[in-house]
Structure formats: structure tokens, C-alpha cells
Image 1 (cartoon, helix red, strand yellow):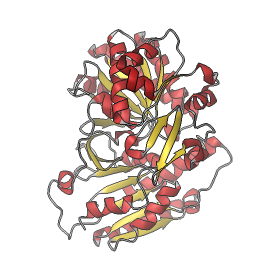
Image 2 (cartoon, rainbow, N blue to C red):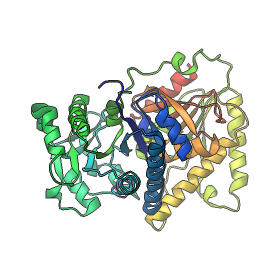
Image 3 (cartoon, rainbow, N blue to C red):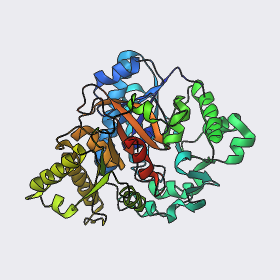
Image 4 (cartoon, rainbow, N blue to C red):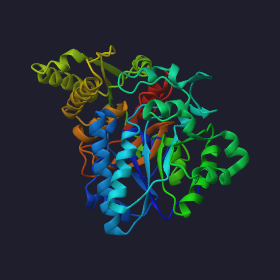
Length: 447
């Protein structure tokens, strides 16, 4: 797609991993009106607002999205700048839909009078092997396509679901009749082209539209059709994974980052080691942690989740882990701090979210108390990466340099951050294969 658009694209991201396909866009972890005014006036295709709402109970997630929508509307009114909204969420269908999109639409309608034709749902994420074909969403693993509902992601303790068919998934989440959920098929895209996309999007109905896609060409075709409709005044609430963000902003990363791109100059072998904080519980992360610890210059430190939950004694335990990590990093080793792999379920969905957030806060405290400067910081898991960025390192704004591996972003924090001058890597829990973390660490350690 072309590199810029008349309207800025604002990506409201429910965790920090949505920047995994783009480069040279800013990410914000706060959203006061004055800051949004500044970003709307800045040159560039768009920016991210990171809410971390996937870690929240649904009521809180909706309230946060409402607040973001209201502040964005006020900033737009002050600057006279219009915008496009993408509600970016998980390519494996975990997230607060439709609560977040409804909250955003309500806020923007109340203040700006914006009326959205419909929700457009596109979970395609090419880099991660997430494809939608014949309305079925698939997760590719080792050359096999697995229906999303048959993966571990569908068994998530908070966002679990039963349907791989996206029409039925929407019905499961909204209560709509699946027959009323519309679909843009691969044939529509490949034979009907942008004109067919336009025709489906502008039908006189507000029911959601599913977009099938298995290649970036499919996304390009859809985007051209949606732009045609937008130029005629239609508005759509996009609920998508990261690949659509790359195409719609024109900020898709062209190549993977090299060591020189990240460090500018190659660090000396005597430099401190890096710091990895892993909070993700998915099986893939467990496999990656095991492989990474095969590296000679990597030292694993397992954190007992039960001790973090024990509030009376947690502080002493956190200090102990931080000191262990500091010693190893200063000795030139990259430290991988990870939680015990057995996930302890709470008694309710809200309890699972609260417990997961509490553990992430404790892991952030461990990182904040490390007494030496690491060569780099890598956060494994969406909630973990947001909590680390905001609580441990006070990142309020950063620039996405690009990706070190497909789906793994490198941020350059602004000067106000405690991590200024140190690369910050955002590594989703569900990206790559068993060797990916190991390979990323080899690159970052220059070994």
C-alpha cells in the first residue's frame, strides 16, 4: 500500500505485541488528551496506544477503551485531524470482543458523532501462521494447519472458545445468529477484487464482516476495497491481528533487524549480559525456555509462583531473585527469569486475570530491582511485556525499530524511560518454534 494516508491510523492494542509487523511507528503506554493531540499533529502514518486491556476483567477493559475513545475524540476535535481506528487483538482469538469495540464506538459517536457501519474482523497473521480460509481460522504448526479451536489457545482460562468457524465464533461471543454474520471469502478477494470488498462492506446492514486471508496479497486487496468505501464516508471498526496493521499503515517492516541495526555498534564481548523475563505459560514458551538454557552464556532462574502469591514474604523473595540476576548479568551472562511452569488456576475468570496480573507485577519488580544495566531486555508474553515496560522501566513512549525475528519486535524507548539506550524486545508467548528464543538470544548476545 502507499506509505501515507490522509487520515492517521490509531491502533488501540490490548497488549504490546501488535507492533510485531511494523517499523518506525511510535507506541504510547499513556493516553492523556495533550499527548494524543501531539501525536495526531506529528507526521507519519499512525501510532499505537497500548492499553493492556487483555489482562483486565471485561468491565475494566471496556471502561479503558471508552476512556481512550473519549480522549482520542477530544484530541481530534482540538486538532481538526480525523483518524481511522484499529482495535488490534490476538491472532489466536483471545480478547474482550465485542466489549472493547462497542466501548470505542460509543465514545466516538457520543463526542464526534462517528457512526460505524460494522465491525470488520480479520485475525490473519502471516508471520505467525494464522490463516482464515472458508471462514475457518487455522494455526499452522510444523507444516500442519490446525483449527484454532483445537489448539491450546482455545482452552485459555479466560478467553476460551469452542468454534474455529469465524461466523460461529462471532455468534459465540455476541449471541448473533451465525447465518447473519457476513464474510468476505478468498474468491471474493481474488476474483471480485476491491470492488467486491466495497460491495460487501457497504451493504445496508450493521452485522460484523469476517475477512478470509492466507496471504498479504489478500490483505492488500481487502484494504483497497475498504479504502474505497472510507473515501465515500463509511467508517468501519477494525478488529484485527497485526498483519492488517502493517498493510493499512504502510509501515510494514521490509527486513529483519541485524545486530548492527539494534546496537548501532557491536557491543564488546565483556559487556554485561541481557535480561529475559518470561511470564507466558503456553507450552511453546516452555519449550523455548528449555532450548534457550542450552546456551553456555545463558543462566536460568526459576521463580516460584507460590512465593510471589504469598504477600507476607514476597518482597524478600523478589530481592533475592533480583540480586541473583544482577550477579549473573554483571558476569556477562544473559539471565532468563521465568515462572514455574505449572499454571495455578484461581476460582474464577476474574481471579485468573487478577492472579496473572499480580504475578506480572512481581516479575516487573524483580526486573526493576536488578542493580546493573543489562545489554538488552527481552519480555516474553503480552501482559508481561506491558507491565515490564510501564512499571519496571517507566516507558511512556517508544519507537518500534522493527523485528529481530518474524513477530518479535525491538523497541527504542524514549529518553524519559529508565531503559533509554537499551533495546527492549517484545516476544509474544505464541510466536516461533522451540528454537526461536535461543536463536534470538544468540543474535542479541553476538555469540
